[in-house]
Image (cartoon, rainbow, N blue to C red):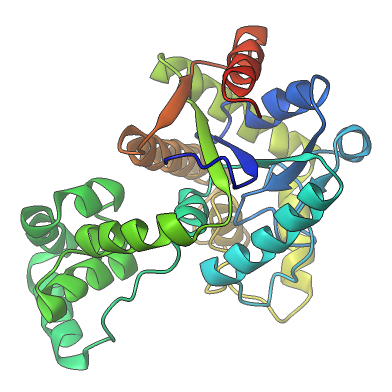
Length: 317
């Protein structure tokens, strides 16, 4: 994104799950007057601490995070609401002379922050019925292949086992004649001039996928030791939640819920949770590969801290 001297600067730190974003953000906080704003669609929820990887109380005392732990799991929350909330937090941080540091792995939130909300065509019941018929007869993989033919960028981001997003992306093309990707690009061009900040994007992009997978497995097993199953049991005991809520569809929570429903055994729950988290990381990395003007970081080391600070110094942030 082209920087403007007349706009305040915002640092955005992205990366796949379990890549060390929080640790890097806290290290950066020791070197510069940052304030952290979380960009995580699961950490927004109260009563969901262990499975979302929220920083513990000691960490939050050292490095407070905005936009975590403020929505009940039964309450819907949209990307547009995030954009509005993030703007408010950014403005508050800038007002006291600090630099906003947005940290997280919810790439949709980052994109909506950067591009605004694209004006997509309304849902078309007939087109949706046609896509559902194709999925019923040939499977969602056939829908994915059709999407790949007309919008390869969206197909790369959307997993074949994600029917809701697959259906919407193909529907957008069939209704409008334009791909969702091209519509977002048009919106981005309009929004760049309107965005009140200079957004500077950094991302941890591990070179060794195997190391990341090991971190993911180790972290999930640690979550189980810390009481993830008990955390999900407490959510179930409320009586007003089920596995159709967006909050409960979060990676890990969905699988533990299935285990508690006796749909899968404990071993399958662990395996499915780790696999789902690895798939999430893969999708996050796919987003990052096509992200424009991205400063790439390999890990959360001191070298990465220096990279960010050197960039800020060079651009007079």
